[in-house]
Image (cartoon, rainbow, N blue to C red; front, side, top):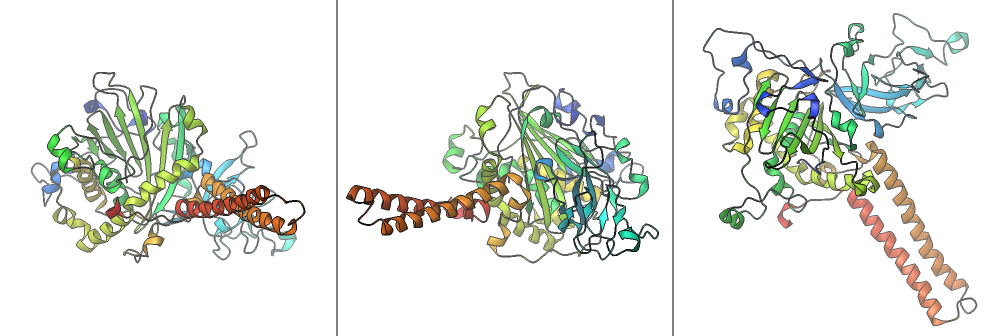
Amino acid sequence: MDLLPLARATRPSLPLAVAAAPLRSRKLSACGGARIAQPRCRRAADLSASAVAAETPRTEGAPCRQEQFDWLDQWYPFAPVCDLDPRAPHGKTVLGLAVVAWYDRAASASAGGEWRVFADACPHRLAPLSEGRIDDKGRLQCVYHGWCFDGAGACKFIPQAPALGQPVHENNKACVASYPCVVQNNILWFYPRAEPEYRDVLRRKRPPLIPEIDDLVTVYGIRDLPYGYDILVENLFDPAHVPYAHKGILRGIRIEDPGRVDNDKEGGGPIKMKIEEANVEGFVSPQEGGYFQFVAPSTLVGSQFSPPQEDMKTPWILVVFFCVPVAPGKSRVIWAFPRNVGDWLHNITPRWLYHVRQNLILDSDIFLLHVEERKFVAAGLDNWQKVSYVPTSSDSMVITFRNWFRKFCKNQVGWATPQVDQLPPTPTKDQLMERYWSHVVQCTSCSAALKAMKALEIALQIASVAVIGFLAVAKGTLVTSTVQRAAAVSTAVLCFAASRWLAYFIQKNFYFQDYIHAYK
């Protein structure tokens, strides 16, 4: 996995409300511009890349309590709003928590409605509300027995209850847990605590703000992946793998070194990285011509600047990833790539066509990462620095993230619900790399394109058969010349060939496409 297609930014402000100042002076921002507090214990919180070699933390100086990352006191991205149909509920698992998002059109008549995030279980018999519907009154309805819920999660209608189907409340047992949620940067976020004291959490804490996403035309995407959260983040922080794992799709940065060119056809090379502002909330990594920023636990921003002789304050490419822990051995990535508004080609290119290439990039290292995760788990994540040999400067961000995960999270995701402490079994390769359930059904653009292409495929087949049937019926009457018959037969053959090609295109781009590195 890699940075995928990069975006050109047109304004001098940096992501996450970071001021356009020298990199060593920037401060991380996780709350729309507010600076992240520095750790109380600097020694214990230090995440420098060199620390990975140490078997035990440094102990000199006065002892102090090490900060721990609170997984439940965070905002998590649910999905891009463009991929959420307001006419139906949408279910997903985030942080081990099954939740459903639905559009409450009665919430605010002036605003046209609001998105809600509930626990994905009807209090009656725990049927999934994500398999329900939005009724004609705008309520979320469980289709098992017809129970209906309003925007606050309160039951408003029980068909089987007396008194014209009015709900029977007993200590709020007929209510659904409702989670705080907000739309920011055109992404629906939710906070995984439903207790009353967290209803006003937005006054205290907001999701990371990235101004460029709102200021520019942005391409969004989403996909479920068959490996865990830590593997996903680690891989995104590893640009050195791009020319090798994604050979034939993306190119590395060619180094002007004859010896390297002769021995490294893929175009890889060393990447100089530094780590700054590292603490429990994340870190910044200045690099040649740009930087990476990690705002824990989900947000990764990468920016590359103009060449050194130009204005170094203006970023010219920008990539944004949101990494979602789903369950052990499962994660979800949401990407947002801002584009140049003046790029006319971008404005006329359908979103699903961008996703074809982006899914191929994800496919090209899915199997590698799935296997890698199992080897790390077998060795024990506490032994990561013992089983991994990471001597290059290009490994600095990976090392820093692993240090963060070890120091502040004890190499574990803080799941919101009890989870089985083992990875799911490894499926076949076509199941590992399937695209339909992991992406297409979650993407409104790809779903619509698939539906249209299937209809076109059937239409071409029908046209082929119809032309042949017409020739048989009209033999000796309407079609008399050899040229007419040849034209009709050619039309039938072309329609059939086009339908077969379209079927191949559909299978390869919307269901499964293998990526065999040996032949690249």
